[in-house]
Structures are given as C-alpha cells and as structure tokens.
Image (cartoon, rainbow, N blue to C red; front, side, top):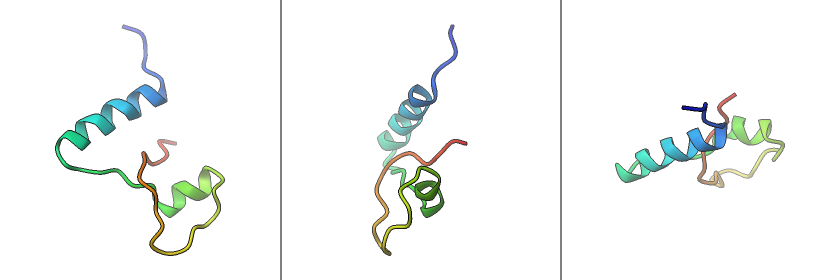
Length: 52
C-alpha cells in the first residue's frame, strides 16, 4: 500500500473525528506558520492544524 499524502491523512483523521462530533480548529500558531498572520480574537477558522 503506498504511503498517504499529508492531505489524505488529514482528510481521514478529520472524517473520523467529525463522525464522532469532534471538530478540528486551526490554532493561532498554525495560522502564523501557514502565513496568515495573526487574526483578531474569536476568529479561528475550522480546519486541520499544521502537522509539521
């Protein structure tokens, strides 16, 4: 079986957690690492945090 890409791994984990009513959110640190800069308070988008 070939190795999964980071996106495929994130999709599988996200799917499992969502089915069990857990929701992933990006942390402020992950947003800075991805180049978003800092967001105002209380504006953290849903999504998978950085795996690096």
